[in-house]
Image (cartoon, rainbow, N blue to C red):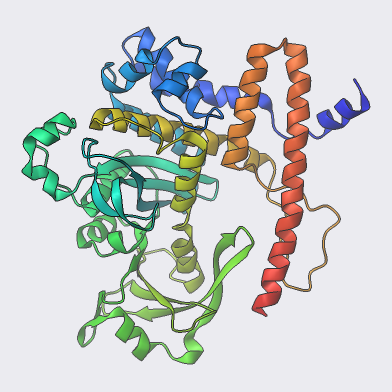
Length: 460
């Protein structure tokens, strides 16, 4: 072994076997759902294609990556093969929660979209989507993320179809929705997802979401009935119950939050520093219900509001509620990773079943990467960040935790090496790539430490 190879081997911090072990574990969860060998093999190849470094991940490119002469097998997997995509979704949830479950886990609800052309795709229509930040011709889906201290990933998702579709049964039938398709609001879809998660016995302590979900009385009541706390964003006109009756959130905050009531707290760690805001807590006429108010440091007139419920026996400390409000951004990270790393929005399917099967398999790929990253995070704790602007840099900055993007890159490299090289040569190449992965993560840890220090200096 050369000196360079020795240095590479000594830098290895990830066991390459973990990648294949977790893939096999996930594949074993999904295997009983396929009655025949061919679709089972196609599903495994489809997963590998989603995890590959392909610019677009659809049936054509995934089939080519799998070495198949044409795309019919992959198309049949999504459109016609006999397997239960709902049961597959449940299997993905079991796999993810088995590895990511931890006290204080949170269910986070949000929606994301994919621009489409034409009018034939199931659910397509002119609607607002955060992907573009404007109204466009798109399909939108509601998702649920499971987030804990060990990691997070998408565990459920379903299509939001605008109400005007229900006036055209033939169009619904052509899109695979069925002639008797019934309209569901985004909050109704989220409520179904919450019911499935609770019915599956998932240990969850909190729920979170943006204003769309915060204004749903039924969704909030569901969590209260199951003693699950929540911190939902709400609008300025949200009616908060007080001793004199309902009062708008913004008016209540103006009346009940004096200057000395604001507390400067970080709601989570961002890429370049802690996400710090001023926060205040306002009691309501309902026991254990609070209005949480967030104020921007740059613009004191920029306020955001959250409605919180804390079950008996759980902390009502301001810092704890702020933490739950901040974890809502986990779903945004999952959307970014799912789209960039595993092609969540790459499907070209028009019919509902094909679309649904693609997003279930994409969630499976994302869950695999999240679990692999969680295993590395358990074995290699995150490096220490500066506590204040005067902190001296450490001798060893350590390395950032394995990210989903880096896990996907390594999975693709390891798979290719094991297929194309003898075992002893593959091991050397793996050590080389792991050395570079470690180097990148150490460099990122050093950069993050200095970013945090500058951010803390700006806050003082």
